[in-house]
Image 1: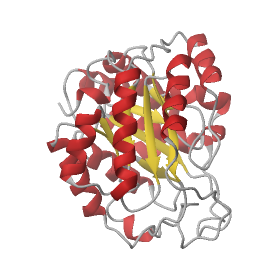
Image 2: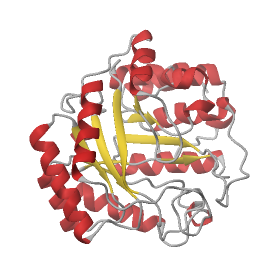
Image 3: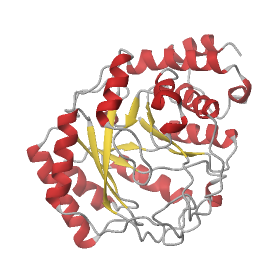
Length: 337
């Protein structure tokens, strides 16, 4: 496979699909793969890097049985547990992130879905952030209803986060309290309500590389424009605590593959960055165009200023913090094309 020729074809309009034999991604030379991925990134996303940050709005006691998660009641971890945070705490965290140069800020809540009085408090937070700040607003709150998506949009939210986690085939191996189809239905409902969707998954769960290709194809079919890729950081007390971390080359190969399959999306580096040299630098040379910055939910990421310094040293453009003028094809605010 001539990967640079394939990169040029993708730039010219070709899109990979389930009808293509994509097994070459497993065996092709990684240097050429990364070079091709970065060429595609440059064409569709330019040098702009989209930075988003999150706050754990409600933590722990989740009834779902996801095998990787520290917050599940089915797993015996030392995860912090707290109800929905106070409004001032959330708004001030968003303000600090905006001042440091972050593009987008998300409230993330544990549980099947945020509802009742806590959902009302979330809406009030978003309404205030919309009034007082310029940072883009995202929500990650589980299996919300159509009406809830509509209310979040009216409150200022432009993007919904809901990971599909892995391939349809492998999904039952990591969770049985909800289904892959429930994930897809939730994503489509959010899109129908005019919200962009940020959706990706976790690699290193025990899945095959073919599962990762299937996940990339599923996200392509959904028209997802922001794809966070997490490398599993096995947490003691979860069923995956003994899972061996992926090697750097396998993570990089996966990220580059996602760029080939989803050329117009922001391929977003998420948890597991310390498994990549230079705190993720190599990923940004291999097709990545975005990152979650600050602290992850239960695993440490990187500081905002350290990320900005690294990216600027690479000639990338960061630190806008207004959430409104990303590159057209890559910006999750632009929704489905």
